[in-house]
Length: 309
Image (cartoon, rainbow, N blue to C red; front, side):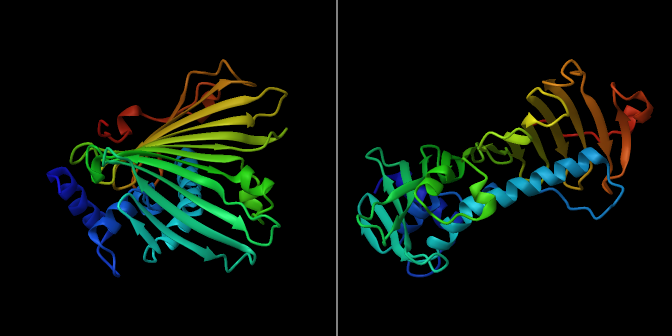
């Protein structure tokens, strides 16, 4: 066994946690698929009804991201809580398992290791066993490059909800409203450096509301974080498709700062961003709003010093 493989196995055991009857190699294959907690965004919660509005929007966006991660990766976490049902030198398979909530459907997770010894491919597939000719549908696909180590690797995940709906799978209302969800991520490159994640959501065309959203966030090991969310759709009253960008950053206490700009569509031209700061109680300490000067408040010196990412 090569030294790099020994290190990967040790890191996998630390990340996943040794439990059940898993072999070290089982843990290595399991760690190639991200867990929802691994990619979750953490911002101290507030019950302050008068919290700064951009802090509330940031908290709402983070809640949406974490809910999406739960929906996308929660099933994976459940499937791999069981021992692999089959093993080879270059793969592990979990399933097939019957879907208790949707009789007639079953699931299967397959993780394979490429000949280079550090690149993993995986897919979650489902099958309608009541069909005349059952066919496995790979609706959740991903890859993970562990060449820098399990804790320094990078990966990508894509979930095709539209394909599930077209196959007749009984999606719930929220999932049926989505086309695709894509996640690209980089684990800690060096101790103390951030976990970086880009999550992109597309939805069927709609004349009202958001039809695409992209969230980019980085989390430091001390709990400091930053998130940028770009919303595209008919958000502002008027005929045009709008693009609104909000960038927020915070420290472990929750104190932070955000900017907001309309970069396209109705209201475009108001590109000088609004800036708002808040304290650990999420109370506004500073606000400058170029398009609504009457909302200006405080002094920029009241803004919390923020770390560099």
